Length: 301
Image (cartoon, rainbow, N blue to C red; front, side):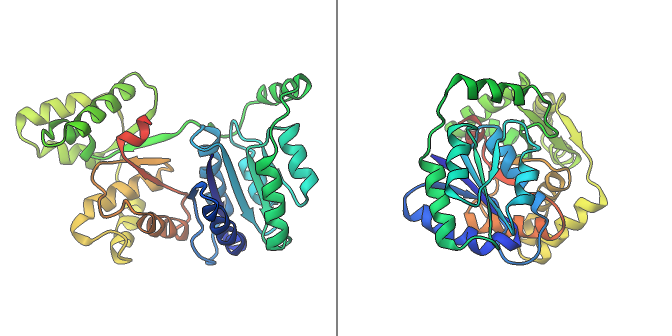
């Protein structure tokens, strides 16, 4: 079972406790933040996590704020999400048996750690009954349009098309070809930016023409002042080394445009969990949502 977990500052302490508990049990877990008790806006954590669950990237999600109310309201705006704010075991079990809930919301300021774990365990262990009356009611809910589509958006940085010419790594070449095939067939929502176009324009003529042909139908985002300011903040706060400033620009453009994932082969300096946390900690500080950093292989998985 793949689980996504997230909280605002009010739920941070309980989130860290639950995270350690689940990791000790050997469960696969992804932390969407927050990464400290510094104040953040709960929709910036709840909505990206809910989109990841609604899109099927995770089978379950856990969200925590002060009461559980704010994150549950935000999460339920996303298509495919059935979030429950549970303060007792019976509610948690009923939400699974009857409602097939896929996100559990908890109140960090109203639940003890012991009680939260008891509720969580009951929720994780309880299956959906699958009875027709419950399926019918869920179908009726699905008829109502959601405010937010769970379909993910992907920003493609320059390293991805460049890897078509990486003869030293044929696995990456094959994955890149397969990735651009699903982009071409519009299986995913992909964007690039003026920074990508500028970087490609500096390539040798033969390579440049092939690269431009590859990206010509992909929507292009502009580099604006907000993105430039955020990119400089990444460098100033030692999130991205100064020598990788264009990488900081890619991160910033994706972030300010509320893109879900940045696809790259290039972020060797940002692929570990702590580095991703540093990126998103700063994103939250500047009032933006979670940005996932992934490779083309992870998109294809």
